[in-house]
Image 1 (cartoon, helix red, strand yellow):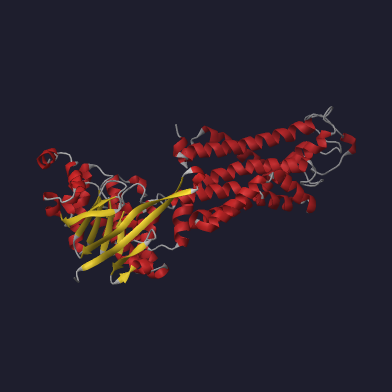
Image 2 (image 1 turned 30 degrees about the vertical axis):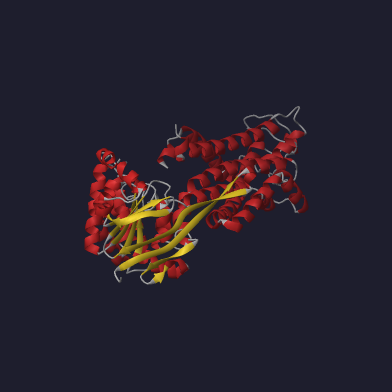
Length: 270
Length: 272
């Protein structure tokens, strides 16, 4: 299939922990255990699972922010896992990330204009004036103003900060965006606005999303396909409608039943 | 910084340090006498309106010597801590950023340095070198970088995992940019606090060295060697020991107040 834009095969990541008396023993924690997934161009693939299931590790390993123990990440026909240094930086330009915590993901000592323009600066794209123009257009697209460029992150609300984070990722015109719980730290009323913004941007810019979340209500809203993770493994995957209406695995059923307001469904399956 | 300026501890500390700095800077203009001028006709005079802090065993004006001594004490404090902070920030940054074997090497070096009683190390080194003011500043600097190293390393280790640093890495930032644009500016607060507190202890070390005769050499005045001179006359010329002792006390207190005030004001975790 030619329309697959990002494909990961056999991703494995373990953490060693010292344990036992005086730390002489060591325990191996498998954060990712042979995880494979494929993201189709222009679609949203959601990764769901409870905390500790390896979702965030998956995101960081896909972007090569953490080294993989084994596996391939094919993006634009290159295996990112084999790249280092400048080659990796160049390849990653079209693979960006929106982070979870809008308060921790913006450098408190940089102005918004600098934060959003940093990627353009790093990749040497355009003159200072052109970069400024692109930053401004991007900020306006996500709902901020020219005056906001000179402000610091602490002057904004959580939702506005997340808009800045989105602008920072999208100003580089990526093809794939990994969204690591982009709305879980926000109020419910703001969540809907940010999700709507992400959806609009997806259509305008032809983006593909890898959307990591523990909130199945959000996932149902945004995803085309869903992957369910548990203890570092993928336990189930499929189209969003199919998975919600006919979950195959016990774990997936439990997850679905934990959604508030779905208790009747729980009784029905039992 | 506004919060720092409204902290009463920091205000007191700042006022004390600023006063001493102004006095030291203006020493040649406000000193009533030449600090090194010997006047055998006015030996060991008690404080009076002509000699505000009295005179010493050679008839030199103690107030004038105190003013010029302040320059030495403050200079030693700044330069020694400057050297220590420079070394500490570099080693701590390398340690905390790259981790791995280089971190282990640097941290063991810190442990080794900390296990040696610093003051005796300084004494030993000074005994080999000529005890000039520059040697003292360098030696104090070279033996007091461990605290800053640990501090910067700890800051870097925790900041390295922050999402904004990961975000910059995703954008394609090189290590240089990560360190100087993202990590260092955000670890500045604890570095400033430790620098201010470090100056206080450097002033003390210099005074102790000069007191032992291994510091600033006479006739050049420093608070430590004025104190030494006073030791011989302590039974009948209290002013020779009291004024330099008070000056050291007040200076160290000022730096400590300023440092702790800054820490309270800038660190949200200790805010009550």
